[in-house]
Length: 243
Image 1 (spheres, rainbow, N blue to C red):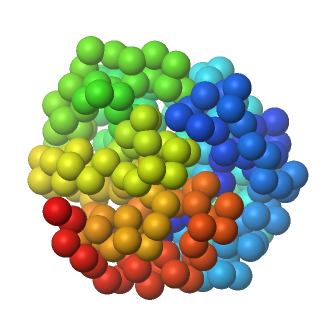
Image 2 (image 1 turned 90 degrees about the vertical axis):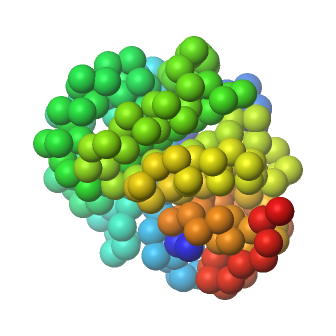
């Protein structure tokens, strides 16, 4: 299972939010590029970058900072947050970003999502942010009435690169991931599933690996030193019972 260190960007800085709450922000560094170099030096094989301003505003706000990350590291980068039109996708791909994450517009405009996925096969990830089994949108500020499992199945019928599943209630809380929901998601679709939200310990990662997920995004636990990236990578290669 691949480990993806998270780099969340707001106002050009590397930050983390708690449960997606923009009022509960911790700044971990002034330079996302420097943070990217740190994770690469510690063994990262991919980076998960989120434009938090873009997620909330609906338009990418930190393109230059993300482009700098892409230019300075030589590993795959996947980017989400405010990716809601193909011009933006083209811009990010042109500077070396490997994959783009779409969520809000995909949920609100499935026809656009299907066309976009087919235009960029295997380069689009579906960002499925869930609150109580329902898909959330607009930087987690709104919750729809759409079942997360139904939405995932609909999108998985097209050539997506995978699904990033986040339980919003777990994100940034250091309380462990929602193993039950992730297991259901992985069984429900035939595309790679990447876990996000609440991953805190080596045991969490091992249990996710036991679910045979494709990947796992780790954020606050790395930034606060609760585990090292090296430990996370080793745990991703092993597994314990997820029960």
